[in-house]
Amino acid sequence: MLEAAEWSGCVVTTAQASQGSIHKRHERGFRNKEHYIVEKRNPSLYNKAPQTECDGQWSCSGVILDRSLALVLCHGAIFFPFLKNNENAFSKNNLLAEDFESDLIIQVECPSLHGTSSDSKIKLDAEGLQQRPGLGLIPLSDEAGLPTHQLLYQAQLLMLVPCPEFQMAFSRLFSKAEGWEFSSEEEKHEYGELQKDLSYLHWFALLKLRSPLSDRHKKITFVPSSMLEKGCTVIACGSPFGSFYPDIFLNSISKGIISNTAGDRNVVLLTDARCLPGSEGGGIFAAERDRLCLVGIIVVPLCWKANEWVGLTVACSISHILENIIKSLSLTKALEENNIIATKVEGFCSSDLKRVHKLTKKQIASVVLVDSGQVWGSGVLVNPKVVLTCRHVVRNASRVTVKIRHPTSEMFQVLSGQVVFSTKESSPYDVAVVELKDSIPGIPEPVLASEYCTGMDVLIWGYGAFGESCGPSATSGVLSSVISIGDVPVMLQTSCAVHGGSSGGPVFSSHTGELLGIVASNTRDNTTGATYPHLNFSIPVIILEEALQRYKLCGDLRSFQELNNVSHAVRNVWRLQRIPEKVLQSKL
Image 1 (tube, one colour):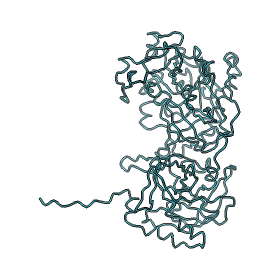
Image 2: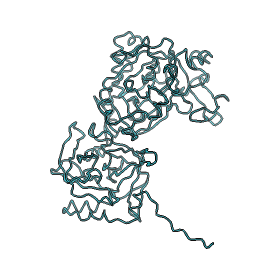
Image 3: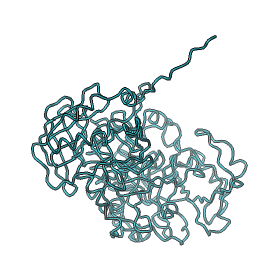
Image 4: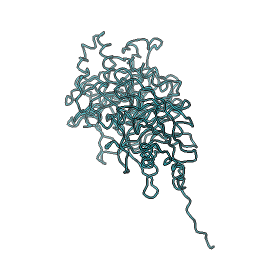
């Protein structure tokens, strides 16, 4: 099933012929002129920021849209260092090859397909096994059974095209005022302005290889992102570190879900599939029966909010990109000459892709945003009038605002809620109970879990990172650990990504839909200040089950008071402290 992602992925490298080693490789000649195969002397992903940016080489991932037409799509940022005049560049509807340096060289590296001629197979020689700088990896040789089957092609630029729909939605979602960053301080210093200029993010490049690829796979299948819903499983295929060492990193696969969407027909896609720098331009694929269909192009593999790492990847809808390309190409002869229309979105989607499991829809319906006026967080409806959340979300407030967004509506329903219980600051269980002034009809009560199994698939829902901008987000993972005192679970650890604002959000079993617990925190390294969204802790709902049942039946809150009177063992677990072992004194 992964074949479509693997054979369509590639690495695109740009450099000026008068600078850098790409030109030198070209002078040494190609092994096979028909396929433009050259010796493997791949440059690093990003050179350290030179005095003139175009003195370097730039690379990113790409997607082969149509092998017979030799059409490749990649991110446009790697072309801007070679722009002749960028004063009015961003006001144009497109940029053509003539807008860039005339000696710009573009090379595309992709895997050769099984069954191609033996002449096209590139093998590592002794020189190729020398240790590389940077990561310090030594690639495995053919003797280990892993020969490299990569081809290197020269390409020409047909056009750079912006996606204004993505730019508009992205700007609304990722406000600078909220402290969003898309590269670390180290990357900004090392890689130059290209890494931090958001003006490049919504541009995409359409390339044409100078010779056709194998006809075994004609073209990739596209599905409009408007067909996607939160919780859909997706595959990300990109090449981390770009051209640093595609022998190892070419077309690396990551699996996740659609965490959230935003903008016109879901033009902005957010996924928890993990990607790394260099994956920009790679594909996001959704499963359609027994094959993968391209739904988006990776734009931002990493992002931070207020110095907190957010473990999500941002992608742009492929349908919007192609629509803008076809619109721009219709004004030129390139559309007719290259038969670009053949790559248009197919516009169909099977019921398998469109259908989101009923359990997932129930989960979305129960997730709420809790606003105390000081901070906001998440919560879960355990019945039509009762919300379970965290103590630090309500912040000692007696009343809070609760907002719920039904899956079929773009509008929030706003309700008033009274905080009827909140654990003491001294309690390790960070819990609060909110009773709504009005009940919410049609909300199914979640089934509370009674059993926990390490390794089970889980989903965490909440309003982390984005607040009410685009409704609740979901992240997927596994139950990494169940920490118990005696036979009673007292803490859950998951590998899902959670962020500020996720507190109080529900943890559900992916398979049964049972409510496992509520998110209490992720982890921060107090020494470095780094946060780890994939290392987080939740309160098992089994701890709260008896008190919830008693309160729902007779309005009695006394059972919740037991959360303030827990053992030292439980307190030590939540303090992340080990109980000191008794050490026998030496008689010497």
